Image (cartoon, rainbow, N blue to C red; front, side):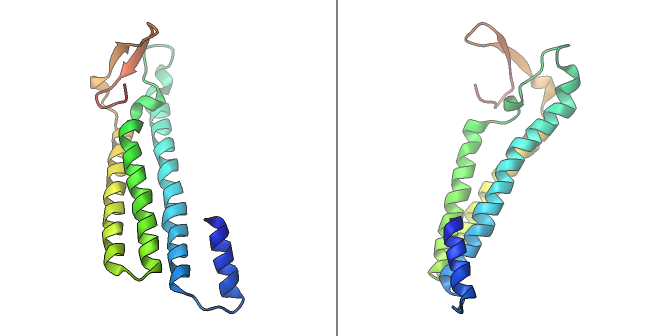
Length: 150
């Protein structure tokens, strides 16, 4: 995608006019690449910072959840797929001037983003009273929260 953006920028700078395809590529760069990068990095950073703040001082003194237990990656993976597919469809629809399809795709991407915001909120506000240690397959005790991956 970066190569396509560089080629489109070179074409415009060499005297070409800004076309619908260029607008679609710029949209993909902003929402698909930069927006997706921001969402994925937040998905990793927020649980880590929450874990440091809430459980870091208790490490070694009592049972604490793992950073991965603060999010349900199996469930949230679908929100990322929906976001990126909707963004790709929106970029394609901009390139072809399908404005109704663009609006619908952006609505779907917005709903996927709201679902990721829900996951980030849940990671930032862990239900500590519901935390229950369970027995893992190797016989060691692992923390389990309702809704976390098994």
